[in-house]
Amino acid sequence: MQGIWNSVEELNVLGFAARTIIVGFMLYITGRFIPHRAGGQYGGFDFTFFWMMGGLIAAPLFDSNINFNNTIIVAITIFITHYLISYLSIKSRTFARVVHGKAEILILKGQIQKKNMLKSLFPIEMLLAQMREIDVSNIAEVDTAILETGGRVSILKKGEYAPVTPKDMNIHIVEGGLPVILVNDGKIIDRNLKSLGYDRKWLKDELLKCGVSDIKSVYLATIDRAGEIYYSMM
Image (cartoon, rainbow, N blue to C red; front, side):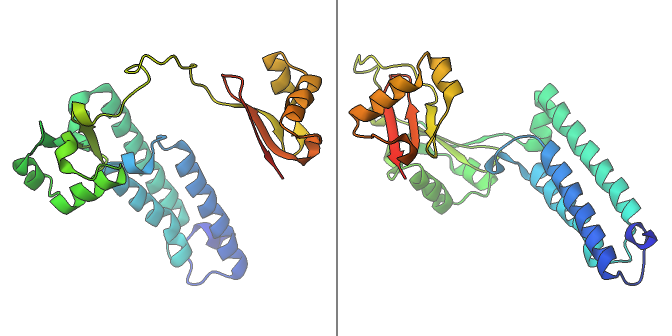
């Protein structure tokens, strides 16, 4: 047990297994309490933190001479430092710009900002590639392009290329909302039916109208805000 935490020349199988479990638990704790942002939204500071923490926490698995107690102390210190910096970034926009940088305008009023492209070391090929990822194939359609701090490019199209919305066409639409699951893997979700004011008889009648006589053969059935029922058979 002593060798699990302290430096040893060689770990036995049980000691290595114990260290693996501890490392897995530490990585879980680290991942559980980091800020909930998507991977593409992490700036250089965040990326460096994750890279350092992953290598630091896993290091005792590859070198038995590393003292686990020191690893835990360093990991906690780095985690607290990252947390404090992230917190201060929320409290102070000035501090956030220092840590995460600021967004750069790459295209303004249809014109490529060469100075900002050079400043950001962002080649035109990468700009065109990210435009294609969001179905913008022609740079002539772009009014503004902004390189966000997370490394992604936000595109604002010119007015004549903007997609038509229901409001433009004076079309009334039902307010959005997540569909409610009524049947999952052949089992009726009674609490969802009750919350909508329906019962099993109503559901069976509605599915019968769709040609479904056996609910147990329904893999998934949902209802949206407009009252439309979707179903998929097993």
